[in-house]
Image 1 (spheres, protein in one colour):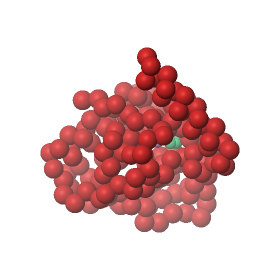
Image 2: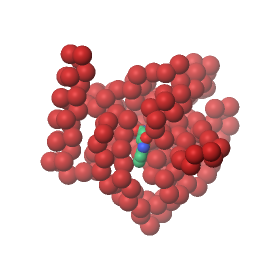
Image 3: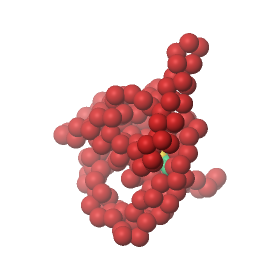
Image 4: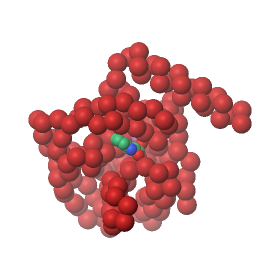
Length: 172
Ligand code: GNR
Ligand code: NI
């Protein structure tokens, strides 16, 4: 089932999310709903706080080529355990900040540990768009948005646009 995506500014997008102590059918259902919501958007990642659940859960699939096998990843309690000194700059967007894009510089390669949908620990090294995306999603779990990397003026301009968008949505 698709879930509505919160739009910035929203207090739930600013919270440090709580770790998931034990997997449950509810949490697995939430992960499946998040994947459906992400693919429908469409997006390459989604964090639980974006659907109003302040728990440490993200989903992602950065396979972009048409006709390539999708690779849906579900990560409970994801952690970056090492990051490269080498950086990468990507034009980032966010489903909670629609139609706004900005370049963000982050470590190019990251080692990530997490618990998968079946409750098994996993570890993998990510590079390129996958590395950018997983860092963007983990930031969401710490109440951080990509606009927090921008200067105050630019961030405020984007926030004002989003406030206006939400006012218009509320009237429609
Ligand atoms: O769909 C998304 N695209 C994207 C592009 C560049 C860097 C990060 C992202 S994540 C974003 C979906 C989203 O908001 N996830 O939190
Ligand atoms: Ni986002």
